[in-house]
Image (tube, helix red, strand yellow):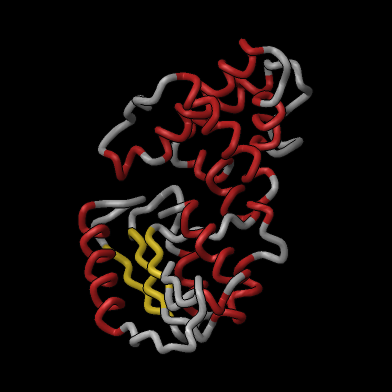
Length: 223
């Protein structure tokens, strides 16, 4: 789901012979456009929360000014700095932003239940990968033709404000072997999407061909 779909796509591109098909929920490819949306553009929907996020970076003494650099890069720098207090404060602001932009699907802004140390690790990893576009170069959308022969089910929520359905739609258009299911009542994950996921998994299991004696170790793994 979400970042996990980027990882699944990257694995399939690297090892297509080991993949029988993919079932992706809340589809992302971690492209520059997607990262800029989730860290900058979606601030149009949550202007108060984004202003707080940007203001913290502006006053952190690292030379960031909104409109003059990428906010995700500013937070990456804050989170790898040498001052523990600076890292902790940046992580708290980042995780509050994460909770905010998924709040429409979650029914409100909910505090992360994980301890501060775990939240800081999460924020550090997220900003590291996002500031480098997931290290997916060339972008996944440009390479999807390499796995166009594989079957796939792409499951996305129509109300996913964090990761709009545009990415899933563009992926499906370039992937003849894929099926796109957009659930009208879902955001960035839901019970309904989980049920669609289970149904697709059952279908894949029923359609999976029997493995012949020529199948080698590690081949035919379903992502």
